[in-house]
Length: 138
Image (cartoon, rainbow, N blue to C red; front, side, top):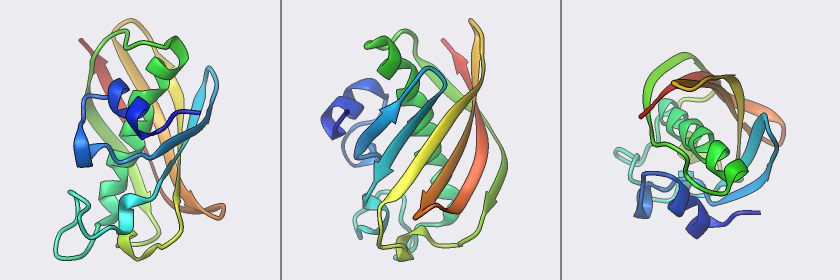
């Protein structure tokens, strides 16, 4: 549905920090994206050849950031990530996964001032990481 260039136009990151490659689907409540750069040696979040699982939260936050603009077709208001919570991971290093990461995000709360999203990263329906993020709107 949306490719890397369209994603880059919708989020405040650019270049290598755009971690998601494609948006596969979305509706009013959720979005499904795919990422393949988690095992690339030039991933900007890698340290000493390792992509710590906690970095998966950035993948989830980027999916959340894309969701609203994907629905509206434009960036309505900028937001700032202010909260990560309930992060649980099943693997310590995401770079050892060779298959594409499926990044799911679902809106848990939305009002005129803030958003909350739950996110999950899976491979072949096996959950690698999950958590929640909070966003304050400008």
